[in-house]
Image (cartoon, rainbow, N blue to C red; front, side):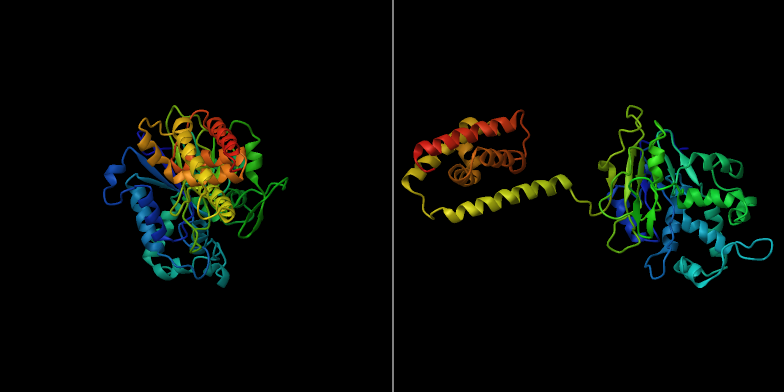
Length: 412
């Protein structure tokens, strides 16, 4: 189900919970130009995973501004939007059954689940009913060629059973909305499974979300074999975004909380890319996303810097004559045998590596081949930013030579 066969990228956007400004910042990060939507045609499609509106009291946000933006994007074929549990509950709050009872009890706790939405729109107003009707038209799931999407749980038996109740676009038929809130009707349990998660017997590890323990239904899904990957929201996970299994990706990381980002996941629709190739952590996108490789590099350099400073406490402030001669030899060896930049001019070479000479001297004098080789390799790969074939071996050979020269010169 795609609005344009020329679309190259899908961005699945997690539960927004009325955080309109977070969505704007995320779209800016994704280079999705709201001021020039035509530039996105044939390139990118957004997929909203549901839970556009809030589900807890006290949440700051702009549900109306958010809904208007998402509706506009959907109407212009720049986005798809799934039905979420919060929208489902909002429909139940506004739906009267034949007996005159509300589909969802009008209790204080149920009211608080979408209080800001009701207060901003005015309960029972034309605007309120307009958005309830729009919610009803949202699909329960979307099946793309290489990936599927549903708010909470992709359950094949439930999806097969619910098919007679759906329109061609996978939205629920109008005449069955009352059945969806009737505990005695099969549609009640089917909607609960798809929008809240299947209750599999917990085996092995379990997912912990903000409401408690949720059985990992995706373990069973993963064991079904070569089924296409599925993207879900719903679960309000925490920590660094990660895929849940080889074919399940969750994009809900509790954006309702002020400090938490709104998370998206990028999927390529390239025919040359196998279905499972895109299921990895590298495809998450969110504002404030750390560069994990850079963090690790910084940590490694920090460890070496600490070690270097410890060596400095052992070293006299002024170099001895032997040390001066050794440093000159060290400079030559770095240019002749290390030289990751492959410089041919000796003066240019010495200038390029001068920042690393003192560290190399300290490691040659006070450390072993392994530490000195590690220092040279990190200077090469992180400090200079070069990955060289057999780079580790080369750094170890240079370290071996420098350690031997340090011993021969009498400084070690």
